[in-house]
Amino acid sequence: MKVAIFPGTFDPLTLGHLDLIKRGSVLFDQLAVAVMTNTAKEPLFTVEERVEQVKRATSGFDNVTVITTQGLTVDLMNKIGADYLLRGLRNTNDFQYERDIAAMNQFLDDQVETVFLLADPKYQHLSSSLLKEVARFDGDIDALLPSNISADLAKRMHEREEARISARNQGQATEEK
Image (cartoon, rainbow, N blue to C red; front, top):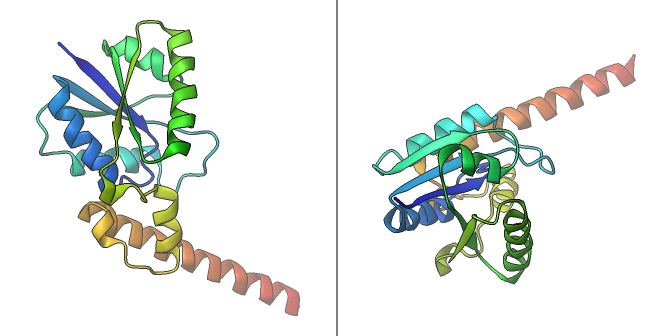
């Protein structure tokens, strides 16, 4: 049985991610989408929210599960019996970054095999960070996200903007005293 893991922060999951999940579900008998924490990033959604978002977006795939854990990806792979690590490549920067991660994973566990899929050209420009930036300024990105996540993102951005305005107004009130 070919078991793979597709790890990422998925903050938020994009149609590019979903395309890789769809393609990976055809290549592997079981595909575990692992919603992970990246200590270098400040997430917009909690891990629990992201897990639920990904579960809803992947509900049509019979051989896809959504999991989460803290720690090293290779440890998670050993825990669930995965031999393959699925990663997507959008550009040469992704390749260099992912090549280094694959080498480190191979060092940590020589049984790990990383499988790279090239991003569909229509999704090569997508990144969660870019989409969050566009959404922050009310750009229309609905066509780049699963519908359930598009609604969640719009709501969260609205909440963040209200919080910024409230904090700014409180700061001005304090200065006036």
